[in-house]
Every structure is written in C-alpha cells, then in structure tokens.
Image (cartoon, rainbow, N blue to C red; front, top):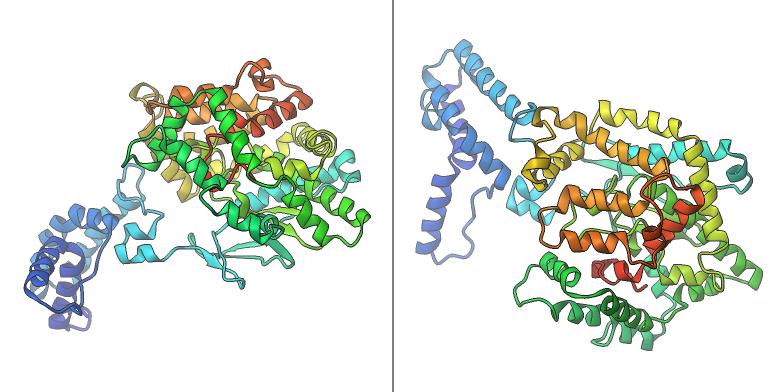
Length: 506
C-alpha cells in the first residue's frame, strides 16, 4: 500500500492491527467495559491473544510507536524509503529476540500461548479411525532404522529375525507432518479390554475398581485443593515401601490376571497359533523395550503401543517424550525404564520374563553395545542441527537446577551442551551403566529443587533386595544390565507410585 501511495488505507490497516495486537491492553479494557454495560450475549469479542503475543506486544510497543507513531499516525508523513528503513529496523530487533541466542521470545510449542481460543485445537494428526496422533519425530524413526541395520549385521539377531517395525514420517513444516498408516493394528489398551466380560468391565470402572481405589489411597495423604503433582509427591514422602507394595498388590488383584492371554486366545485358531502369536508379541516387545530405553523414550502407557492382529507384533507409537524427558520434565516423573507390567508378563506364563523375553533383550542389547559407534555417529546430527523442542527443554532444565548446578552451564552455549548431554546418557547406557543411576541423574536435572526429590531418589535406587541396588553404578555385563532393567521395570514400589493414567496394574 505504501508503494502504491495508498497511505490512508495503509494507516487504517496498521491501526487495526495495532489495536488488536500491540495496544491490546487498551482494547481489552474497552471490551470489559462494554461487557458491563451491554446485555447482549452475542457481542463479538476482539482477538483473544495469548501469553506469547502479549510478551511480544509489551516488548516492541515502544519501538513501533517510536518509528511509526501511536496507532500509525506518522505513516502518512513517511516516504517509502523511510518506511522501508524503519520497518527493517523493527524486523531486525524482532529477529534478535525470536532467533538470537540471548533472545527471550523463542516461539512456544503450545498453540494456546499464541491465542487462548487456539487452546481448543492441537497439532496432532487425525487418522482415518478418528484417533489423534502426535507428530512423531522423524529422527526417532531414523534411529530405529539404524538399529535395524545393526540387527541385520549381527548373526544372532539376524538368525532370530529381530527387526523393529518402522513407518514413514514425512515432515511438511517444523510443526506438521504425515505419518504412515498401519493396517490391521489396534491399541494395546483396546486389545486388552476387548476380552473383559460385561461384569468385569463394570467392576473395573466402579468405585471398587483399581483407578478409584488408587485415587482414594493418594487422597489419604493429601489435602483438599492440592495440585495433582503435589498429591503424588506426598505418596513418595508419606508411604513406606511396605505400604506401597501392599496397596499395589491389592490393585493388581482387582484385574483378571489373564486379560492379554484371553485376547490372544480369541485371535488364535489353534493352540499352535496362540503360541506363535504370543511369542512374536513378547519377542517384539522385548526388542522394542531395549531400543526405547536406549533412546530414553517414555510415556509408555497402554495407548502408545499397537498390536498387529495378523502377527501379534508389538509396535511403539508417539515418541513425544524421548531422551529422558518423561523423567526429567513431567511433573509426575516416570521412574521405570520401559513397560513390563503384569498383563505382559503373564502372557508368557509360566516363565514370565525368564526365557524368551530376557534372552531377546540380551541379544538386542549386546548387538547395540557391540556396534554402538554407528548409532552414536548418526546422533551427531542432533548436536549440529538441534530441534526447537530441545532448545525449549534446555531452557527448562536451567530453570529446574539449583544455582550452583546452573552455574556449570553457559546460557550462550545452550544449544551446544544440551544435545551433547543427552547423547552422553545414550553412551552411558551402551557402556553398561546401571539404569537406576541413569534415572536418578535425569531426576536430578529436573526435580532437585522439590521437597520430594530425596524420596524419588530412594525409590529409584531400590530396596536392599533389588538387583539394581546390589550391582554397581557402571561397568555391568549385558546380562547384569538386563537383570537391572527388568528389576526396575517390575518393581511394585515404583509401579505403586506411578501416574494412574499409566495404569501400572494392567
């Protein structure tokens, strides 16, 4: 408009944008006053900007007013050359704040921070089954592909046809992408619950069911109005090992022990078919568990696994929490390395995790440890091209540390040390570190300021009877490392204090 000498139209457009976005306080005050004087409920609200947009306005309002006048009143007197010069000055200031190392306005990951009305939307993809799916990080799938190359080269894994199921992830922008649809699959949660009788279904969802009983147990040591994460902190601080194990045993007893077995029986046409399906399910789950542990993938609730109805294969989905973020950043931290709960273990009765599950884990971990350079070299791209999520996580980490620990990091080098630190954890795992100490160190990075931190640490490091407590922090053999992982993943003292949405009793 300025180029075409339509200055009146340019001023009107600038004023409209200025009133909505930059001078939002004046607009909001006027809208509140109008609400008090009007009786109409159909009054159209103004643009409801979010916290990020408000920070932007507060930061740059003076700069806009200085160059263009309040509401753009000086625009008419500017030549095109002066307008372009002043516009570029503002753009440079904005770029320094949004993209610069010392900038304070890095784009947020949540839509609600741009505008409150956008909180009703999410950046998930919706499949043709009308379920929402988070955008999966293409890099995780690339690392799974590299792991598969390791398994192909390893004679033991190759002979057992150990391969992770991968699928295509196609990024379209930094926030949106496409994921490959997997036919003939069902979420593990739906698969397990499909074998419930009507009576069992009603009981599980009743006041006597495990979810309600667990909630009541948590409330016993909490006050009304306590935030959810503080209620969970209380059960770490106030319940003993014995009390927790006793309550968790009660919760497990409320669920039929063989739901997953029943589901596979219904899927099978013969005893031989049942044996093949359950063996393939647990073999692929064991392999997936080790690979996801190496990459620090958490949030492994029942809906983040898919079961192939033709082969029984277990497939992991939704890697929104990777490289230890579920332990470090979730307000209710995850303390288990992977999912190995009762329904999964009982599928392989009478041996449970002994036999096929344990041996598969040993073969997979030995292959990855013996060819670790290939995986670590591939991860070098994370250091050279860190993602936006990692930058935001690095800033969260600094906020969660004590002043003494935070002083060890330099804000200017935030995108150098954070990726290197996460890759160092992968190196430790591939060199035989005790998983309990990995979890402890990740906890410290995000929860050291919390009153319950020491209680978290005590639960993670284990009781005197736990394998992980008896073995050293580093230098474990493959067999010892797997034993420690299974010990931590099946510990009722950990599972009995886990977020209820994870359904540890299933």
